[in-house]
Image (cartoon, rainbow, N blue to C red; front, top):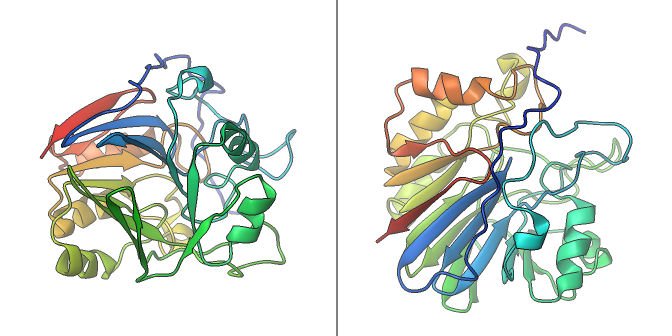
Amino acid sequence: MTSRREPSPAFVDDVTPSRPPAQVEGDRLRVTLVNHSTVLLQVDGINILTDPVWSERVSPISWAGPRRHRAPGVRWEDLPRIDLVLLSHNHYDHLDAATLRRLSARGSAEFVVPLGLAPLVRSLGATAPRQMDWGDHQRFRGITIHGVPAYHFSGRSPFDRDRTLWCGYLLETAAGSIYFAADTGFGDLFEQIRARFGAPRLALLPIGAYEPRWFMAPVHMGPDEALRAHRILGAQTSVAIHHGTFQLADESIDTAPRVLRQSGADESFVVLNNGEFITLTR
């Protein structure tokens, strides 16, 4: 009732889709922002997707709910083989049923999900999703996957709040460690992750859907907090996620990157547009 949303353009036609390579070998790490929290990570011959969303809306219904303001940065037909899908929680802007059905139909991907999400993901076509608790770890083709805490919540209806877990992931790879924070509020978890795993080579940190602060602060970092998290983690490179495609809170789709720059972020905290990528070496 008190919301004062900044206006966003209905659609911004400024995305130049990129065509990722089939795979990346050795200790190089290619990071492509598809949109929102969907990132394609390519390392040591393995292709990883985080929270994949290609749908027009992030909603339980196809004709209403948050609609995309920008196109995906990788066309579906240009998406390489996907080996591993990391799902952080079950909100519609992170667990998109239509996209997961399409990925499952490809038949090549394994899915890693928080506790309690395996039945839903299995119903969307995944054959044997791996469930993880905070503190768990699993191996996948030379990569060690750690489930790590996040300050957030779960739910896909008014009746299932916090029935399933939410989490971030820390990956130990040939190119160094990768931290996918997913959705989280700010807190001491960044100090804990740094103490346990050391400074990550790459951190994917959310910066958007943060206004109004009185409501969003417990579950979504603002850009200034994401910058603090970057510095606490000691990440060599951070890439901003959770911005630019869907307006899920009061700020406009392009406010968060501007505020991040105004907060003093330097070249070690990268803001990519949909379709842009960086290649990191160890």
